[in-house]
Image (cartoon, rainbow, N blue to C red; front, side):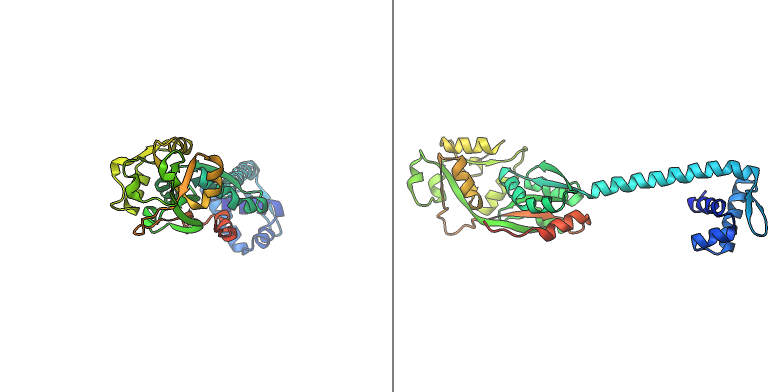
Length: 302
């Protein structure tokens, strides 16, 4: 039985006549009468003793009234609950980031938005760039802050867009105990016997592939090694167990937290050292909070 017909029935009871109910429901009296007839035919009883000026419930109609009220109230309560849950989900932004550095950018960018939109909630997930892209694409995440090394493999999926929020270059990070640290710049052939260390929170060769493609014929694939944390990568570099690529937008922080590491430009002229931190999003995501955030974020150059 349709909820609309039960609602019409309840309105007739409330206002005492088909005509009064029709006026409140913006229907014709004939349409109201038709709906009541359909209910009566469906349940096999007469609901009203129809009089010229009013409509009184039959004894069976009075019993049915309680049932109709319960059905309509349960339906309305269910709809309200669903709408509240949907509204709650729409107010929760699911944000991904790929490292502590990206998390720092995320905090700086989102602070004004958080102050202006206290009703918006946040949920966070740390993954590598490739997985973040997958999660944005399938709707598991709404936005992600992730590095762009100029080899945007994750944008091969055409439904993803990105916006640069910090840009610079990749530089070498090398232990100050290594004689090369006293130079003004370093060439790849000078570090060919050293391991290049990169960080990924999960078992993944994503960054290894990125670096091999970004610096073709400059790196031995056997010399690239993943570590589980940024802290581990930095400690190994600081004590001369390897070398790392560091983004220039974070140099001030890196120099403070890693006093034993020297940061030097890549001297090779035939390589692309560009780097940026990007916000990654799906333009088909229609959450109001996503659109508001993308609109209010100011692009910052570090």
